[in-house]
Image (tube, rainbow, N blue to C red):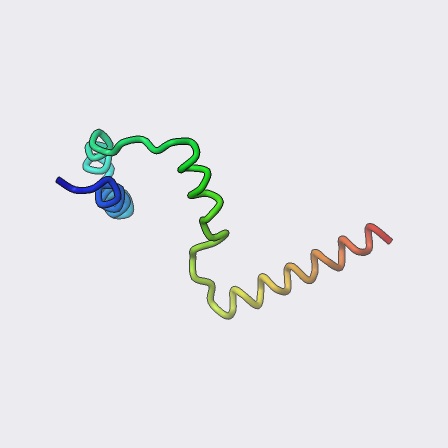
Amino acid sequence: MKTQDELRAEYDRLFEAEDYEAAGKLLDFIEPISDEEWLKMLREAPLDDEPVSPAQRKRLDEAHAAFERVASQRVS
């Protein structure tokens, strides 16, 4: 029998593969987690776990700088 962590990983893999029927069937074997465990996972999760290319980072930095300029003009 697989551990709960292994079952969750398999569920994630099936869901990512868009095999929703198999993923749904697997949910019957996964025990729910507590509210405390869920909140801990949320607190420890990275803000963004997707890789960002240098070009995307540059655009994000430019957008942030533009936002800061607009925000500072409204305060002044």
